[in-house]
Amino acid sequence: MTFQPGSELSDEEVRERVDAAISDNDVVLFMKGNELMPQCGYSQKALELISQHRDDYETVDVLEALDAYRDALEDHSGWETIPQTFVDGEFVGGSDVLGELDERGELADTLSP
Image (cartoon, rainbow, N blue to C red; front, side, top):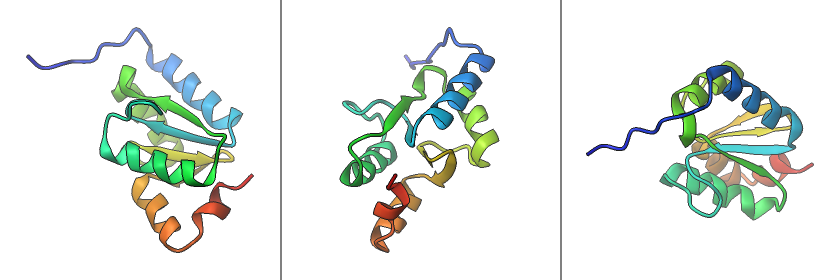
């Protein structure tokens, strides 16, 4: 039996949540799962990279309405893959971009307030 996530959230509610999370937080990570239980390796990697440089950041679990979150996030970033990181309202990238920034020693500056 395959798990098919259902959602009580409308597309508009998801868009409002995405808009609010991006505008209300200095750093926000849209991820599969949550801080305590990431649900994919890419989300876990992004979370680890961010938490090395910041104590205060927001995470949003997209699994409750994955397709709607993908669509809403793509409107902001041009990407449909998850995870996605936004800093000061600007799209930074997924775990691969965060990893590249970290390797170049630029991630701390990118995430700093």
